[in-house]
Amino acid sequence: MDSTTNPSGAQHVAPDSFHGNQHATLAAIARKAMLERGLEADFPPAARQQLATITGPAPAIPGLRDLRDRLWASIDNDDSRDLDQLTVAEPLADGQTRILVAVADVDALVRKGSAIDNHAAANTTSVYTPAAIFSMLPEALSTDFTSLNEDQDRIAVIADMLFTADGKLVASDIYRALVRNHAKLAYHSVAAWITGAGPAPQRIGASSDLADNLRSQDQVAQQLDAQRHAHGALSLETIEARPVFTGEVLSDLELDKKNRASQLIENFMIVANGAATRYLDSKKSPSLRRVLRSPERWERIVQVAAGFGEHLPKSPDAVALEAFLVSRRAADPDKFPDLSLTIIKLIGRGEYVVDLPGGDAPGHFGLAVKDYTHSTAPNRRYPDLITQRLLKAALAGAPVPYGADELSDLARHCTEREDAASKVERRVRKSAAALLLSGRIGEEFDAIVTGAAEKGTWVRIAKPPVEGRLIKGFAGLDVGHRLRVRLAGTDVQRGFIDFAAA
Image 1 (cartoon, rainbow, N blue to C red):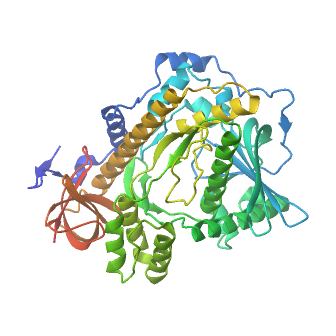
Image 2 (image 1 turned 180 degrees about the horizontal axis):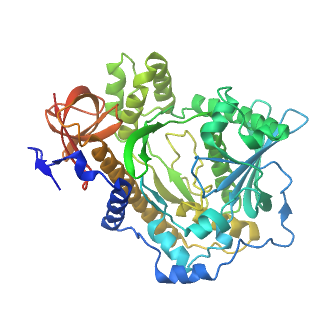
Image 3 (image 1 turned 60 degrees about the horizontal axis):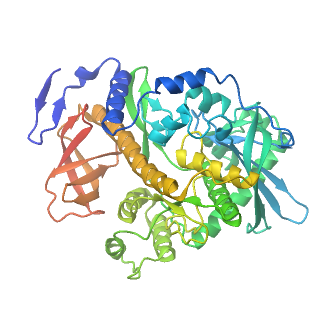
C-alpha cells in the first residue's frame, strides 16, 4: 500500500491503493468495528440450529381478529426488506378518523430465552453500515417469516387510535389481529406523489381506494405534526449521507433527508408508542421507556441562540427552543442542518429506563411527549421486542415476563449497545468518507464545529457531508462555531479524517 504519513498521524493513502473491491474493504472494516465494540458479528451455532427448525411464519391463532381486508400498506426505505409496521386509515362519518398501526408479531417465533433471542439480546439492534448489515435477527426471519411482506398474511399487534376532525387523539386500544400488506411502498416515491412532485407508485396508481386512504393518513399525520411542534417537539433536520457504489467502487455520498412520507410514518409511530405505554399503564404493567432528559448543555444552547440575536430562557424550555429553530429554518434553510446538528450534540443522547406501575419516568424532550417507548420495530430493535412481550402478556392477563431488576439491567444494556452500534455505523461511514476524500489532501472547505471536549474538537464539512477531527487551530472553538479548514490527512482503515484550521 503506497502511503505517506502527514504530521497529524493520519495517513494520506493514494487513491489507487483502494481501487478494486472497495465494497469488500468497507465490509471488512465494519466487521472489525463490530468485534471491537463487543458486538456479535455472526449468529452463534445454537441460533443457526434453532433457525433450521423454523419453516414458516407463525400460524394464525383461533379467534384472532381478521383485518386482512383493510388497505394496509408499508412505507419504508427504498431498500428495506425487514418490514416492521403497516398503517391504514378508516375515515368515519362524523369527521373522525381511525388510524391503525400493525406491528409485526416477532415474539410469535422468537421466544424469550431462545438461542435466537439470546443473540438479539446481546446486540439489541440491527447495525446498518454502508457495506454490510448485521441483522439482529436472522434474515430468514426479519425479511421473511416475521416481516410484514407484501401480499402475505401475518399476525400483528395493533395500535388502534381514534382522532377527531382536527387531529386530536381521543381513544386508543391495543390488540392482536391477522393482517395483509397490500402495497410495499417507499418513502421517496410516496413523498413525491403526495406532494405532486412525481407520479403515483404502481400500487397506488392501480387503486384509487388506496390513494384516498393514504391521503387520509397524510392529513392526520400533518395535524399530529403541527400539534407536536406547537407543544415543543423540535424541528431538527440533520444531514445523513449514504455511500453510493458504482459496482464495487465508492463513487459518492448521497444526502438522505426527511420527507412527507417519512414524516407520516414518524408521527404515527410516535402516537402508537404512546398508545403502548398507556395500555401497559392501564394494566399496571411495567414498561421500558425511551427518554431524553433536559439538555445537558442548555447554557451553550442559549449562547448559540444569542449568536443569532435570539433570546432563550435560562431554564430548558422546549417550546422556546422550537420557536427559535422554526425562525432559523425560515431565515437560512441552507445552513439549518448545521444548526440542527449543533443542537442535537448539545441536547445529548436518549436512553432506556424502566417505569414501574405508579412511577413517573422522564419524558422525551426532543419529541415533547411524556409517555414514550419503542414498540414499532421488533425486527430490528430489541427494546421493541421486550415491549411487545409486555403488551402480549397484558393482553392475555398473563404474568409479566420480566422482573423489575431484569428490566433495569436490560434498559442499561440496550442503551449501552445502542451507543456501541451507533459508533460502529459512524466508524464505517467515516471510513467511507475517508476513502472518498483520500485524493483531496490539502483542499480547503467551510466547516462547523460539531464537538468540543478535552478529548478533541470535531468539525463537519458540507460537500461532501463528512465529519473529522480538527488537529490544529482549535483553541477557543466550541460547538456551533464556523471556520475554514484544510484537509490534512485520511486513514481509511481507522476511519480518521483530519483537518487543520486554514
